[in-house]
Amino acid sequence: MTPPEILRTLVFGFPVIKECLDTAWPIFIQSLGGLMLSFFITIGSLIGGAILGMILALMRFTPVEEQAKRFRFRPVVLIGSSVEWFIRGLPIMIIVLLFNYLPFALFKLRVPGAILAVGAFSLYGGAYFSGVFLGGLRCVSSDLRNASRVLGLSSLQTLIHIRIPIAVRTMLPALLGITVTLFKDSSVLVVVAVPELMYTARQMAFSSPSDYAPVLGTTLLLYWIIATMISGLARLLEQHWDGAVSR
Amino acid sequence: MNFNNYVFAAPYFGWLLRGAANTVMISAMTATLALLVGIPVGILRQMAPAFVRVVLAGFITLFRNMPLVPFLLFSVFVAPDFFLQCTGKAIPIGFEYWLFIVCVALNASGYIADIVRSGLRSIPEGQVQAGRVLGLSPRQVIFRILVPQAVRISTPALGTRLIHTMKNTSVAMVLPIVVDSLDVAGQGARIAGECFAWAEPLVFAAGTYLVFSLMLEALLWYICRNPLLTGREYDAA
Image (tube, rainbow over all chains, first blue to last red; front, side):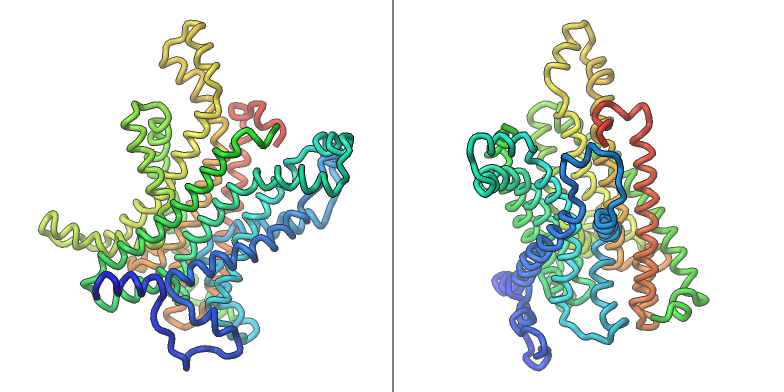
């Protein structure tokens, strides 16, 4: 294959066979491939992970005023923490495989691989998001809130002008870091035949062994460049906001 | 779900146990190698002359942003050709196993170097100057002032990263590794290849990883409350 063909296939995936699509599920997701599917899974799992992470963080959150009090048994906090511990204790490879094989083994349910992949990565991202959100919820001290109320801001204004900007500045670099992790780890989907970038590259390389080096090298470079760009953005934001948070 | 047939049956349970033992072995080797590479890189990245620092910054960026699976597939399938061209001999059988350990360790060493470096950076410059004023030699400043505090600060993060590395060894399944040296997830895939039962061995493998990470977390917790490591930084935790 010529270099432009290799690159085009890596970015957009193999042509889709219409007969293989499962019409019970959205066609759009099943017709994506290559790097585009990697992006879709990253973005989808960012959204799903943010929702799950917020739920877990709110379950685990205890207001600062209450932390000084003596220990009290809180079942909701316990449930949130153990769910997070459970997900963090599993490798992403195992989460992806379990998501792919358990629905059929338990409920005889057939779901397209791309949708299961988004689910698996949402779960994985949610566990890491919850820690970041918890930090964001805690980082605005009650003194700062009281001060803004004393200066005459309403509680809504305090939320919009004080709490959200500070929380976002604290959380955004960490969120971009998790985005990089999700994008990089989406390459483990190669084991469950979801046609994202790594799977496309492996099929291409194995179908024409003379292309091993160019195909796998281009894939590695694509992953590396995109991951470096996102983490560079995180570093820029961190430098831009350096010192502006705690004041 | 039929655990009696696919997990606790005659050959399969032995495979899984051997896989669990292999996971321990691979993780230990990977962690050792990653620490051996990562800690010097992190220290030199902070303290060496400028051109060394630039090279090491490149090293860290290269391996931190490298996803593991493409990196492994690239090295395992391109290395034999490269080896043949360089030495004129075919690569020895079983090299994938060692290449796998080296790649995972390099990947982790990028993170470890950054953790060590941030531990060193968190110590105020004033302490170094104060040490010099009080008459300590540069060597004494490093070993009496910088290293104890940096170790104290970076131990929890290092432990977390090593637990993560242990979990990362589950990607061995994408490589053509000799079946006897596969880890627990790989042995699960081997059982699935024999009898089309994915769910049961996977649940067993997931349980293994949970037990391992629980044990390592307990160990890390125990290490971190050692009097040598508990400074004022950990009074709150």
